[in-house]
Length: 309
Image 1: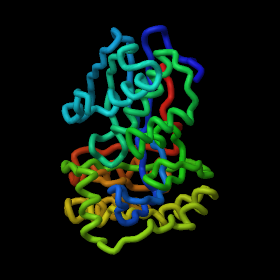
Image 2: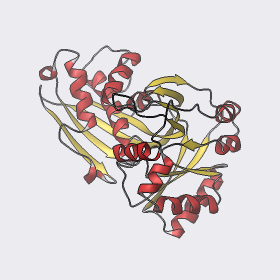
Image 3: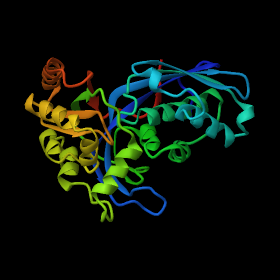
């Protein structure tokens, strides 16, 4: 990878959150994972990671911004796990060291791949900081070991994912899409949502296909056709665990969204709008209704984890 935006001892990387335009889920496999057919879109809601050289064998992290107190700072942190994994494959953890500072904007445990975005940013940052020659495909393979969403956070834009969602094919997507994101007060655990999905769907088999109309809408840039075909098989499970989310979804559609959907495993509710002006109006209306703790506007698609600054 070409180090185009770094100093000798400091690297900055920006990584996006995501929304699943389609999330089709099959029954649990023997290994516990669920087969997925999904369409990702990377959104302009970013976490910014700064990586500084540290003494060999030293790995530490500080998190700033919204919900920073919810992010672990021990070795369970995905960014630290990413750094250690990369180091272990290129000479050993004791050969390298890094100190991360992450400024959070992507919701924590919000169904928008905030932890995966940080892991993707850490992989890109450390590869440059430590002068490791590694291809994008090799980085994606490492990312898949860390979590199913990490490869997409590296790739960005719009992509179809299968398997656990980590086997990716870029999708033709014309035009831009304007989203309003409602961040509820409640939290949701991804494993808990999948367990509830299993309870609600005891006979689930293979993952259903994504709607052809969604892919056609993306290819033609028809935002209304895309809105008509948004689907999330985890949404009933999320709503059963957090019934308030149904109120949030109804409020957004009632205030002018083309469609609303729970993002991933939730609890973030994502509303697709006709254009930027409509997104501004919707965000103001939702803020006035007081159905969630915060409102964010974002657009997509955007690139995956990239150097900046």
